[in-house]
Image (tube, rainbow, N blue to C red; front, side, top):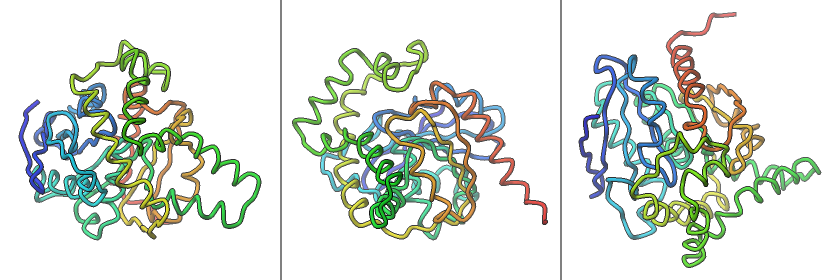
Length: 298
């Protein structure tokens, strides 16, 4: 991989490029507490066709680690994303594949007016649009049914760890306990990932503790005052049906907000980019092909 640096808002972002220099550009955005190495099993599957760009988001890996919580607001993270794609592909829109908080960040970017000119397609894995999630929760609670309340409670239970992340001392204790057996063992227990597929990053502990500022800066503001965020770019949801952190049913009304939406469910846990890399790469490539081919008129 060729490493470069993109500077945005005083933050140095480590950017990595590999693949076909003449191919279309696809940008991979990792989540918490990963780095660009999350994509190590997917990059080889895309490299023959695409020019593959990945980067360490702020607070992770080789990129700058801001200390203040406000630096991790979604507006700042979306600004980083646009800075990267403007640097690596100034003249052409890019395809995007994102996971977890990387997907949350790109959802924010996808809601901006400039998205239609800069993002050709977006494939999202296990990272909700927080405004859509907030609106979904409100819709279930405003006209409560047994099924709707059950879904809200199930997602709340799945996301309970985010409450502990808002309490500094408790968040460090929880992270320490979660990762006590090592990252490969945690992913095996949490997401049924073969430990042999997992490499533990040298910055994992600091990335995990620094990264909780994403939760503190965004969860409450977006869930308590969700915006009406309409998305005009083509979006593919890859929904992990066995994901214990992001339950599949909250995506059921995403089509209310996304003009061009495709959904594909796979029987995978949260870290599917590791456990189901072949499926993720194949679905992403097929979706890119479908976007490039205009639909046949009825």
